[in-house]
Length: 76
Image (cartoon, rainbow, N blue to C red; front, side, top):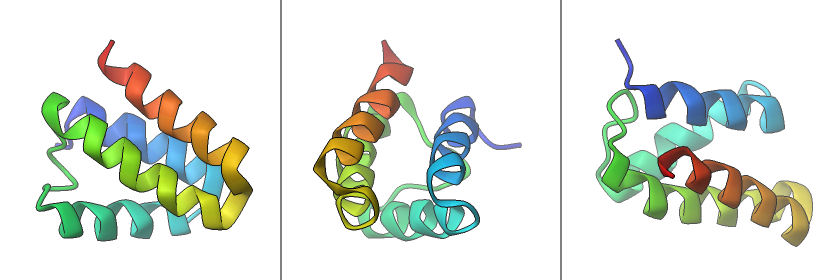
C-alpha cells in the first residue's frame, strides 16, 4: 500500500502529465534514492524541487512553480 504522500504526488503528476506522470515520479525517486511507493514527509521537499524542474520542460516556469508549491503544501 503506497504512502499518503506517494498517492497525492502521483495524483498531481498524473493530472499534469497523464501516464507520463508516474514514470517521471519513479525516475526522480530513483535518482534521489527514494522509494516511490513509500515517499516520506522528509522526502517531499527535495522531490518537489526535482519534479518542479521536470515541469519546466512540459509547462514552463509558471507551471513548474505551481506544481512544486502544490507538492510542498502536502507537508504543511
